[in-house]
Length: 425
Ligand SMILES: NC(=O)NCCC[C@H](N)C(=O)O
Image (cartoon, rainbow, N blue to C red; front, side):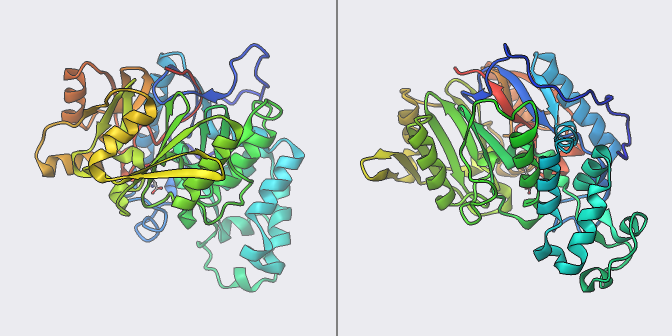
């Protein structure tokens, strides 16, 4: 792996000890016990002024600094005793399982993407790599020049048309935001179909990890998704908040569709894992791309909320005799609808007082994207001084980490974490 600063040495994949706690995310704010993150790597060195928009980044990152920032972030998680799993390790270890390797290679270098001439040659090239090299290529992508270092040019119209430095396999810089591609909701996981083309391939990696990695394979957990199949019914994990006690809050903004929410709710209800899903209708805009960019939970009934979000129309889904029962609420009842679903008398909404410009700037810098480590203890970016000071005034303990570089991808601590084990409240 081409790293700007050294990363910890990989350790061999191990199945969890039989006594380890079950995979389950029982709430948004209960004690965080295990979490998947991704340290920025070579994929971010592929970002250029020309491709950054398509790859969903607003700027080019200084990768070395981003890695240092990320190391501080993971140290904060480990500092409270959470087990930190690195996506790159999980992927490399998964590729050691022959069925997993074949699945990933087939879904990465498919004939429909590369044409019948190049696809078999690219698959053969990938199968000849060792696990570490293949993981690095899957995350960081591959240029035509790098391909030609490995194999003779296949006679392919698709590849012939590519310039030498063009990417035969695009990088996946948004793997940084592990929250979005899969989510654990109570005792099961959904591997999401991603809305934006730049992120679709991320799901192949999680599908393989949860099916074949010794840490996850064979451990009793349901699935809230059909493997890579729910193409139009998109849900992204940044839109999903597990409120606890059988309630889930989902945002329908730029990424998550109503179809996706209904499908998720139906699966949760059928398994008895949840009995209330509240769906919020959000603006379809990049600044509101996921619910967690505008609203996150910080203790048992407190939410940090962006002033510019306002009140949104919402709907409560519950199991009905012939499927889903859906009740719609006017925007002014948004907080009441969430509180009712949670079975509490009211929410504490935390919105720092600041002028509209300052609020918009902090929200753009992920000021509302807090990650709870336990009830009332959160990690946030240091740059959002007003939100952090306000949270402290409100009795929330705040651990700050630097986010000057990481934030350029439009995600904060909540986006950069995929909890796999979290206690209830
Ligand atoms: N939950 C989140 O808000 N994740 C941040 C995703 C940022 C990424 N650049 C994207 O556009 O998908």
